[in-house]
Length: 180
Length: 180
Image (tube, rainbow over all chains, first blue to last red; front, top):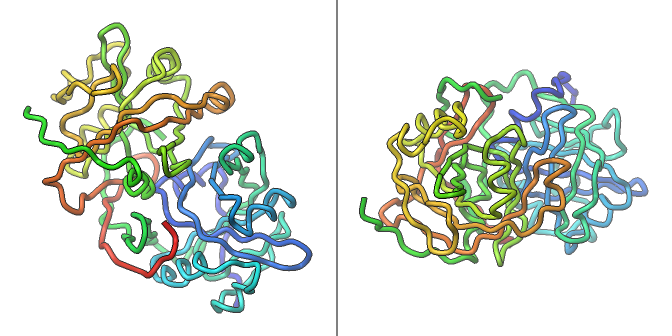
């Protein structure tokens, strides 16, 4: 897979995360990569972009993220929904999820964790604040490099409503807004 | 306005918040109510439902929430988008937003802050953890009572993509998922 993404301004990362899309987090330790799927995340600050996400300590990713302090947050478009959800249904302890689900690991520039080639956005992240990790599994990540596929216009993200239910993002509209 | 909502199980509150909809937070202090609009929030735990949200200390709501420790998180459907965004463009320091935008304050059961009658969901919340409030404006709230309008089936929420750009939630679909 040829890497055709372009660098995305850190000051605009919030526009990608704020709508609340399902994300795929990739991590690596000892040369072994893993992926988990998550939907509990929020922007925390604009620039440098900080975002918070909840990783249960029952997830294989929890220990890896805690130990390495690094990950990539990948945003899958709706076409990738089935694979993304399937990724969340097995543990990386037993399975190489990149191989299992035919996903392409792409070398990142600032972190050891690989990016998922098939996702239209990749955010290279380092743990910036672990104050609430032991209490809630809440990691605050700083996005240190962001990539976007310039061929994807108005990407359709997808969102989780619990259990088997998801929805795709729908019609775009504009309202005059003074806020960022 | 007749209050036709029914109580909603706290164990399912995550299905409302997880998709990342724009929210309206109502607060009250000294008999004076206020509303702010926000999009930076995440679920933190299932039950009791905890959720985290970022309130900038430049917002009038910040001090009220910090002092009273109470609020209501109201979820507007897309039909309310214009009013919700307009609410975010003025400060409650000068304007009674309920009056200004023709919104109906409805008495809550567990908190002083009024619920917004026009929103299809109302979550009565108390501040549960303020560890990261001074650092990031990050409040962790416990939902102590939840209300939903039973007449609203498959509610269309709306989501912010930054500045003037929003989108409505789109097509619902199902994928077999072992996770909550």
